[in-house]
Image 1 (spheres, one colour):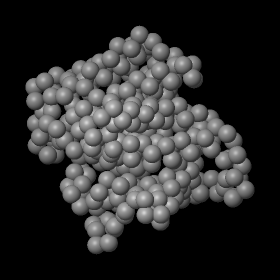
Image 2 (cartoon, rainbow, N blue to C red; image 1 turned 90 degrees about the vertical axis):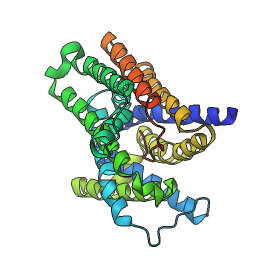
Image 3 (tube, rainbow, N blue to C red; image 1 turned 60 degrees about the vertical axis):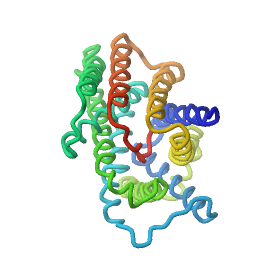
Length: 303
């Protein structure tokens, strides 16, 4: 059990620092270039693991069309919104906003699946929305169009992930988590790889030149290997050992890490409204998870 808790902590640390690596790499490459590098790396790593029979992938006679439809929400829309949001805001704000995903999942489940939230869940949702209000309205920075667009992009990422989680519930009976992740990584590699080539028309020499920058290749390895592959296996391991209900608590650790890393490593500003908003969001998310029915955890990649 101690090992499971250690794996949980390490996994959430990986997710928490992912925003820092994303923010650092975006100083040198475009969002679409970074996403292409990330997903191509993750897809090839998973393919190697499949070839070595470390993981088992069986896609024969499976409804792949449904998975590809879901891939529109995750990874395509989610990571477009998330990377754009991180680029226009701060790593700490991104971590706080992305923490809202469980709240949006609950709202969408009530809307589409008729899973009505309990009164305590409704209160928790209201608390988290209040927290977002503190962050969005604090400091009067909505007059800065770039920052406002970044916050809207992060909300778009939250909505995309929540739609994916809600719509993918029936597929969890037909695909194992590793199979869904394998398809999603390749969908991301093909989409973002093609998009990056179409937008930039880079030659192989120019691509290699970009990857020679230390901040770029370290971010690609961190996001493509640690955050997309290693953390995925870590998540499935500790959820199996300690259960979905207890594991939900650890997700808040990633948010705290992203905020602390943004302040400590990048010198990002952190004001009173960030603190108040962050606490309200974490309380709201914890309440939404705590007072709702136990659900199967999402297989979506994070960070």
